Image (cartoon, rainbow, N blue to C red; front, side):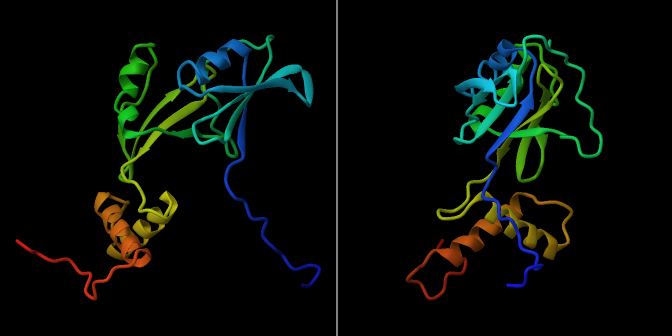
Length: 198
């Protein structure tokens, strides 16, 4: 390999996301008390001993971490949305949980978008106590055994593009799942096409 040849640095998933928080209790009350993330680790910020570093499990074993400082107070002013800034943080919820989100935010007096149809998922948006936009998202599909959501999404995108449709819809997802099953799961049948036995 030539010395100046460019090579990728291959990632394998999000390791963690760190947010600059206010005081410790605001972080615990929001991330665990509202979003149900277990508070799993607590130590000083190793780059700034005046700050705490709280770790929460968002549900997949990866981490959301918060730098806290008792001198910082919560400020709900929306976080700036400049070039290079974080627009929102999206978290996965089940369909069962998704349809409870609006009611549970209403009970806390939290302003939210209400359910938003994204074609391949439903979303609801609101802001955390520090002004960060949070999206709770719920896929409308489960991938076939042996595949990931990303595998279904790329096939649904190809189908949508071939048909000239504007965005991914439920039909594209269903067709993508059917295609992945046919491609990846064996059958004794020589003709696996659709039939009408009625």
